[in-house]
Image 1 (cartoon, rainbow, N blue to C red):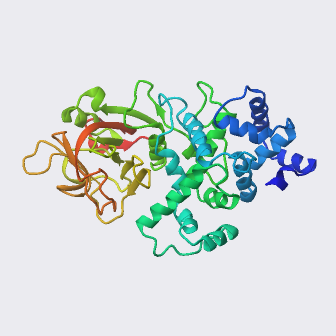
Image 2 (tube, rainbow, N blue to C red):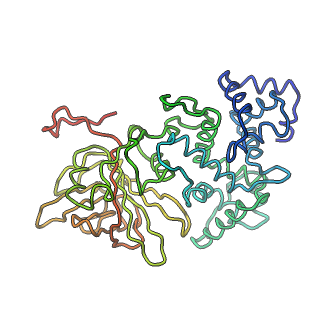
Length: 436
């Protein structure tokens, strides 16, 4: 990267020419603005480097946005402060990046924005396979992998305990200034799709601050190979708040949903705000459209409570049998007490079509709301008594129990309508079609 940054004036002009007029204007405005903390401080230090050369700043921004993977990778390493005389830690940089990214994604709609405890470690360990290829081998093999940026050595023989140990080694390096080499950075960066999206969002927030009333995609900074719909956060009703859906959780889950379910989210039920009632809950979710249902279990002694839930793609309608769509999901949010932290999402496998079950007021069949698995042994079950539930391993999703223990006590439940159904005739269920 040093050779690129110290290149000739002609090279500066060539790189700067790749910037659009709006990019150059945004850069000039940013450089003239007062100094800020967090990600803005990283970006300003990278662009100026104690030098007010505007051509150099334009060249460096062009390197960040470059289609050339090598140029971009090295530029990001410098931006992260990992190459500086007084280097930053990768962990600190990721935390600042996440904070700026969440502000852009939610456009300030998600209340007091903060970085969830699990988010930084989750982002750092997302390219798990690539990291284990490096940290799961001997020192000589590790250096060869880094030197050639090759991930071809098998991970056979690494058990869960070994995997956790090696990921903890990586997290320890990421937490210490100067402990992530340029080669280790390349392996991590090139396999971190989620972090690439966060970089886009953080750069967008810093260079193109959203103006009130502006379109959701205005001023979005794009990096190569990033889908634009992953950069647009849902619009929220300002009156709706969540005790279970944090900004980071909402961002991570929205990435897993169909595109039409990422546009507008409305809270239709909260046990805190609407009362802990099955009757109120079922009325709120029945025949409404696509839903996110989140459950928080009562805390267990010595363990932080988990939040888990499901995405339901089709209407929930009362029926004594299985219904639904193969687009349904199950998910759980690990609170960070063990690896891997953050959300784990399970998709349907095609093993069976036990996608959703919604029934009540019957004597011989289960009454409640279930997803996946078998009757009485659901992947996720909320009993109509609205006190208890259970979560078993389910072949429908190839999922493990979502809760800390198979049986759980409900602490809180929320339901979010993420894609309403438009009905041609409110009394004709067959005349329903999904809103786009």
